[in-house]
Image (cartoon, rainbow, N blue to C red; front, side, top):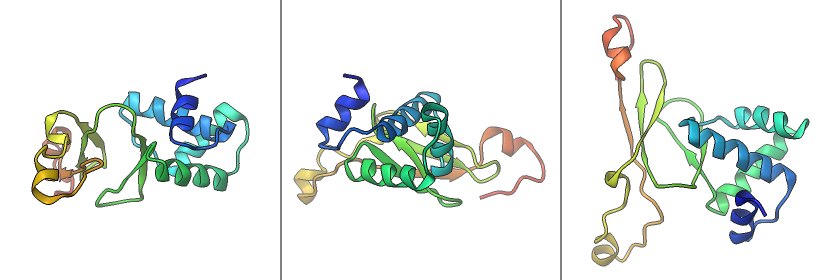
Length: 146
């Protein structure tokens, strides 16, 4: 049994070739630090499967998000992107100049440990998007600012 198959079964999600392909695509993207559009997930899934309907990929993403295996990354600008939830939580840095998205790992990506005690709210994960301009865009005249 592969790691993706075990994660699907562990989350109570039916294992299909399409879901395995989407999981593989998003695992690879996470390792690369990439945050993919649904259409990019579909294109990369076709490289694995040969053919798969775009709607099937959207359905897979919905099922995987509902199971907590994939996260929607909503940024201030542009369409939603997707990433695997495997590995440690992290926040995101979003450059308004070039549109680059970077991961911000570390302890600041975790919910405050006393939050449950203080509020009674059980946090599944914490996410913050820091919006600004990357080093390259700050050095280039004419790039738009935040």
